[in-house]
Image 1 (cartoon, rainbow, N blue to C red):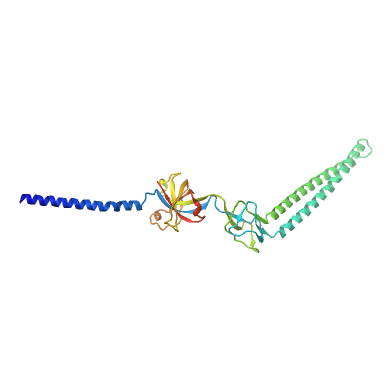
Image 2: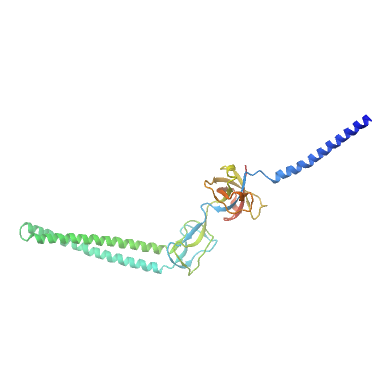
Length: 300
């Protein structure tokens, strides 16, 4: 009976050990699979693709009416290339008037200057005659005063010439600004005017995508900022196609100022909506476009 009980105990222990071993083996792949599904990212943030320095907004420097549009969306342009021309009629009239005013001021200045040699000669002769007693001293004084007055009038006329010249330069500047030119090399991505539109100074007429590198601006929640380090690697995934292959990136700059973040659907991020803007460079930006929304995963 004792032997039978001992055999029963040994069999029961063997059965329990086998069950525990099988249970542990069945749980290990599940744990490994969960670990593989959740890679250890230092932080995850939403971001958007941008171009270094941002899009260039080209506006009108003066008021006017659009007379000609020389480009379309998607056109590649060079620095200095004419893009839009405003009607130059009013500006040309201002230039013509300024030129006429300058000519008038110059003519007046020449007349006054031409009188000075004769007045000075007469004053010299009267001064010598007054010294010899041939004429009274009052005549010599009047002659000197006439010279001084003529010199003052000539100086005033010279100032008038300078003012007229500045007016002409201002009118010419306005005429030149009727031609809106490309400030840099780039691509037209936002043409917002057409012929006949009346525009005011500083009105945005179009946007240019400059030929500069693409970057990613990511908003990182303040809870994860401490885990970031400049130079750390990251992965960029497009929000529209989360299953696509990630694009390698590098953290170039961590913002120094906390700011309010855009609303998020993540309940963890709603705890604190403050964060910093981080800038990342891209190794292969060919698949991305400016303004595209992406997911940024920072690797430890």
